[in-house]
Structures are given as C-alpha cells and as structure tokens.
Length: 171
Image (tube, rainbow, N blue to C red; front, side):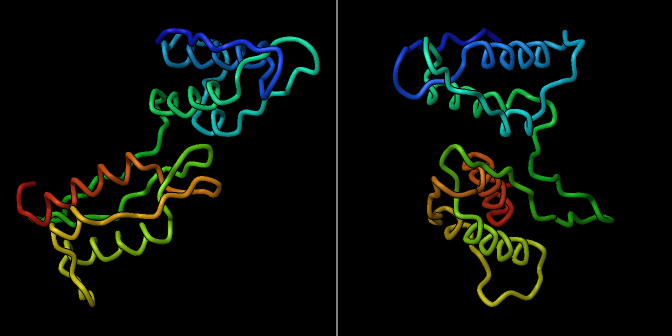
C-alpha cells in the first residue's frame, strides 16, 4: 500500500494534515501487519473525524473521505456477506449481511432487504408470493441513497451475481 498524496489547500473544505497523516500511518501499519499500536478497524475509518485548520494548509476533504472509503476493503475485519452453510446433502442458503455506507452512494436498505427476502425464500424453496427469477435479478435496480445510510453497492451487486447463478443453475 502506498501512502496517498492528498492535495494541500489553504482555503476551502480541508482537514488537519497532522491528524489525517496519523490515521493514514496507523492504517498502513495495520495493512502491512507492522503495527505495535491497536489495529485500525473499519469502524475507526467510518468514525474518523478531523478538525479543520483555522489558518494554514489542509488536505481536501473529498480526497481524504474517498481514500478512507476505499481503504475499508483492505482491512481484515471488513464484514462480508455470510457464506451459505451446508446442511446434509443440500445447501441451505442464508441471507447476506451487507456493510452500510454513509459517506458514499449506497442502495436503499428497505428496497434491498425486501428483494433479498424474496430471493432467499425462492432459492430455499419457501413459500413466496412472487418467486424471483434469474431474469428479474439481472433487471433489478435499487434507488441510490447519498445523504442517508445505505448498503454497499459492490457487496449487493456481488450477492445479486451469486443469486442469479443459484437461480440459473450455474452455481
């Protein structure tokens, strides 16, 4: 992992450089497994708060926020969708758990939850008013959310690819 090169500005929305550098150094030490301090967690990245310098230079807010969101995927404690456990000779598929996002675009949680419930009922052979088809999974579109909490887009899309495979018989 290379240390990021953030743009430095004296005006506009910016973060204190020392505070950002300290977190980035801890993050790099965690990822490279050379840390003697407590490891950085996904929650640490999501809860990171930096002051704005009154005078002097700072790092651009948008660049730092984008870097921290991207850095979540480097950490070992990043929550992922739960794998399907084996039950006897059959697979009992369990509903995934998605990471929630706040600082970047996500999918509407209510829409995703409702659709995933239908998918899981369909693939597990449970009664459902409208069983889901592989074609419906390919066409589904969820409303994006930007200012409120939503599900991680990449994780939801990866689950949909897997579910499509279940329903088309290719996985």
